[in-house]
View 1 (cartoon, one colour):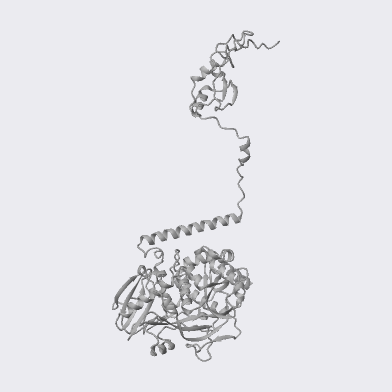
View 2: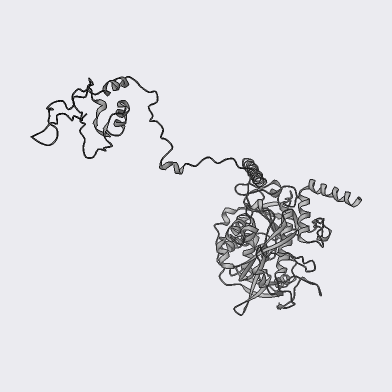
Length: 592
């Protein structure tokens, strides 16, 4: 049986089929009706041609799709709309049917996109390490939430303002008790200090240098967290914190009319860096004739080193806590003193100066320190003499260079958020930036003291506890040196502003009458107040001195023990229950 194509029309006038077909293309075969014509849909060259002919599409869906697609057609010959075709009846039936959801059917998950669809992973077995990480993360989130709510409560309570508003109540007490008979003369906000500027016309002049210095040990420059050094204790060496009027050299210079204003580097640095301070401090001012003396009280806050003073995280309020502000200040002071003596070459070779240490007795072993009595000219009638300290000397290019030695201490990485043992060697800048945020006032005062002393270098030691709960044993993780001018610009310490603050305070006090005054930093507001006090104030004041270190409560097995035993003792102290259990086991074993 052959295939009958039928009559093929011929168009003698042009290209394409004629306007009227010559006859039916297909004839009736076996009683089956065939379309009398083939519908042709006109198209342009810009339209997309997907199929030559389409017998299976849904006319309703195609109509909506064609409208949404801008009227494009997939097929040129569209038999679904041919009335004479066999599909026209089915199309008419489908035209009355409407779907509730007109969305196209979902694509099957096969083809090129299936390569990027991964199977859901099977639940893994939770081991102890994963559980420990989850517990640590939950504790960290709980700690952050607790600090966040504490900070919000302190802010709504009308605290001293950001960032000082996030301070516990113990640190918001005044450094000195304001007596009712005191008269407040002036109140100076810190905002006025930031606008002051004064340039000292002439460089300082050295009037006298006393004491002796030992050389710096360069081996400590190679100390790192992997090669740490145990911090030693120097109980035989004495350190002196003598105030201005008790200094025999300053009394002698005042008697010779060498200057009109006298102070120490610790007192001047507290004034110069006052806008950065958060804790309360006080300075005693005595006007005697035409001379002005800046003193500190016995047991003053200026003798201690603050820890986390400018941090946003509050410290524990209990004074007996090893992480309280007072305990950390005592710990930081001892660390700083011991560190300044350990990094020296203790071979007996010292650099001596004009006079020996003015505060040491004959035969007394003193720390390596030199006192430079320097004089600055503030104006034609005012000269300032200050006692400045340098801690060591080193040779740079064949010349002896003065340097200062100070130590930063890490007590618990959870407070700072940066673990020195992991970050100090690889991210030294991040560690220093964190310390600049948490201890901005302390670092600024150290830099100001080094600038006043005329030192060229400042060595900063990074000292950490052996264990966060052991505040008696420490290790040196690194020693980094800085040039003073570069470091001062790095921490944004303006020398002109520093001297502007001192010059304004001196001019203000020079206008006062003869007598005794006290300058107090407000514990709750960024400002200082000047009070007039009686002449016998602070003379008979009883100060409770801390116990000597050998009389303090020592941690278990602290003496004659290795580092591992100390760590174990500290762990036992932190976990009281575990320690009690271990003690019972030891008792039972000894009884047996």
